[in-house]
Amino acid sequence: MVSARLIRGVLGVLGVAVLAGARTAWSHPLHTTLTEIALDSTDGTMRLTIRAFADDFSAVVARHAGKPRPADYNVLEADIASYISATVSVEENGRKAPLTWGGLRRTGDLMWVTVRVPSVRSLRGVKVATTLLFEIFDDQVNIVQATSDGHRRSMLFTAGDGRKLKAIGPGASS
Amino acid sequence: MSDLATYIELGFRHITDLKGADHILFLLALAAIYRFRDWRECLWVATAFTVGHSLTLALAVTNVLNLRPALIEFLIPITIVATGLENLFARDRAKTPGIRRYRPVLAGMFGLVHGAGFANYLRSLFVEDIALPLFGFNVGIELGQICVLVLTFTAFIAVDRLIATLRLSGIGRPTPARIRAVAVSSIVLLIATRWAVERAPW
Image (cartoon, rainbow over all chains, first blue to last red; front, side, top):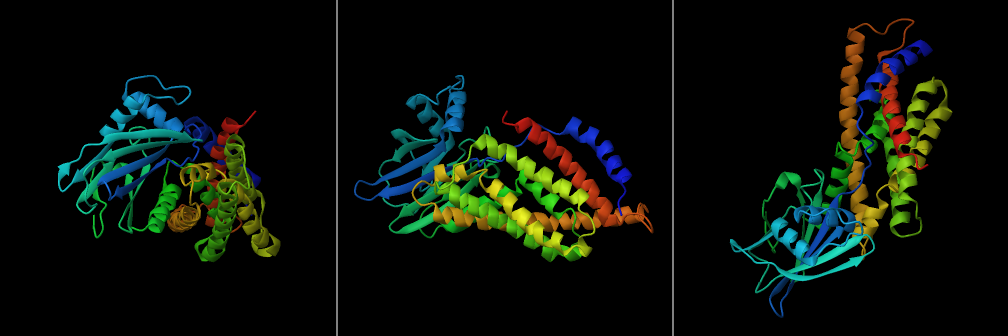
């Protein structure tokens, strides 16, 4: 049987230490983005559609642009494009591919950013890397899902990956 | 990697992330009273938690249930506090079969609260097709919980041996497992109480 004295003793000794040292309350949000990649075979355009939570995304875009955090999540498209260029990399057959602006829309808590890579014949030989929001969240996980010719490939990018490029095409092993 | 494997990994990472301490703390509170030989009962309780967790998550992401985030953030540490208190004050479990029966129910109910904690995130992100992400995420949560519990029990065995070595227990005194249960529950209780105060919605 445990005496009340034992319980009081443990509570007393640890209480002071824990209450003095415990960090501010941790909530448990899910820090993630979802990027869908699709190839339009009619015009050879690879389209990347990035979904990100508007509050975090607008904050990191503003920070990247050296501006204060916007109160209403409104950030300039030019600032978003600049941030995407800095954090999303695409290589085709070993060569860095240029990203062009495709548009922005907002639904509920989410921002949808579209960028394009012109003149891509196939996702075979294409590699991507994304470091979206890594600079503000250690636990950020970015999901990338690529679809091409009925083939689908899904992968995660975490802070531990750094800027490591990963193959997204059919039959890719890394 | 398939979509399903991606979502499983997402759930696994979420539960095993040390920054998401509220979930790990709750598992510690759940496991604190058990000895290694009770692992089946502990796994059953943790699974009841996942079932409750999955149920709310499913209701919330399909818009059947809509809870205020501030209220959920407050209720999560409250469930941890309640579990810690139950650990300290419910005794003689072996002689009281009712306690064994209500603990999974309690864990299931608390799972309902925790599941709502990040439902908004999944609902917002996976707008078109929520079923597969939801299923995979919860499988990952359950696998992560099992890993956390295995590590927890390993640590508990070491702590119990240390307590026995230090001769803190003995005839007429509490067992090492009971001393450890009280110590772990007390720490968890204090941290969760602080969180509850900080997150109080009033």
